Image (cartoon, rainbow, N blue to C red; front, top):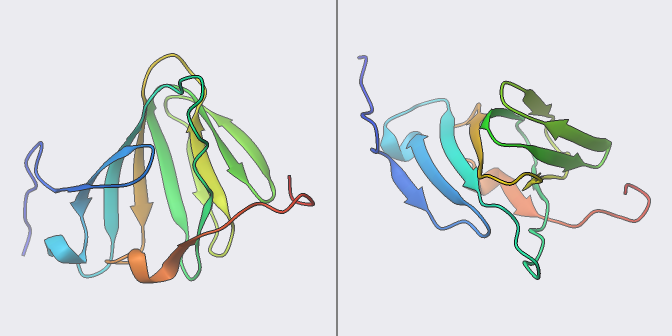
Amino acid sequence: MASRVARGQGTQLGLPGRSALEIVSGNLGSVSMTFRRVEIPVAQPGDPLRNPHVHHTFEECIHVVSGCGVTCTETGDFQAGPGDTMIIPAGELHVTRNTGDEPLVLFCFFPVPDIEPGTSTGAFSEASK
C-alpha cells in the first residue's frame, strides 16, 4: 500500500556533528530502504572533525541539495555542490564535511531498512589519506 510522509515527519536522529531526519526506514514502515535528510553546519574554529564510518554490506548514495562540501573516502576526496551525487560502495570508509559558508544539506539513501547493524565508525589509515 502506498503511503505519504508529510513535511517534517520522520525521526530526528542524534548524530554527532550534524542533524539528521530519518524520513523512511524499517522503523517507519519500509521493507527495503532508508532515506535521510542530513544537514551539516558550517564548521567553526576548534570544532572536532567527525570520524569516518563504513557500511559493511550495503552502499550509500549521497545527493547534495544545497551548500558545498567534500566527501572523503579511502580512495579519494570528492568536492560536491548542489545537484552532485556520490555513491559510496559497501565496505569503504567515508565522511562528508561542510566546506562552505552555509549549511550543507544532503539526501542520503541506503538499500536496507535499518543501517545501524551494518554501520561502524573507523579511521583513515595514513596510506589511504
